Image 1 (cartoon, rainbow, N blue to C red):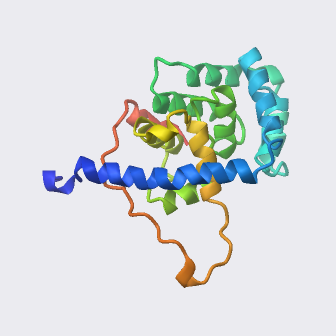
Image 2 (image 1 turned 45 degrees about the horizontal axis):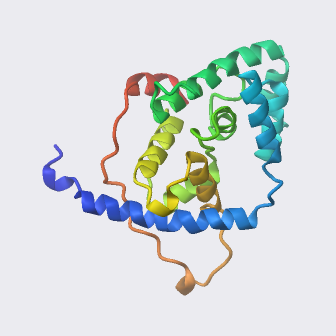
Length: 238
């Protein structure tokens, strides 16, 4: 049984979040300085088409596969390409509607959209491409997840397990950070955080042990707000 003494003081959680933001803000600057300003053009094109059409087709998904530098030499690609584009758009239209639904919290919308995308071939495991699709649908609300993001979360002491419902929990985690952002990050969106995490999680250059930076203390014991739908999420969503 958890006692009051097991729960950290609000000041401890605030200090932990502050250390995370101290890492994210320069990482975001590093991303902007280190990535070609033209690299995200494909993503922006897909976002604009999705804004106009309300869905993503096979061409849009193929573009995001290239943008995420994923392999197309897999069976799921063949299965997806064998579906009528109208079927793919019917599924993604429902997902687009879900992640844009402001009656849902960010985490609820993420879980609902992720559960819908699950219906398409190739989206029952892993969240990298699914998160790119959902972020293209709602670029200021959703965020991209991948292995580099996971590595950054581990480095920053932000726990995110691979159990079912990970994408919803990821957006819940980002929502908590956004709700406690410092004044100089007032304009940040979830997408800004994911790019900062992406940069934080890049493969490190070799450093002698004495020069490796110390990691911040993990805030894993700070209470995380729960959202509805956990049982359905665990049973249904990848």
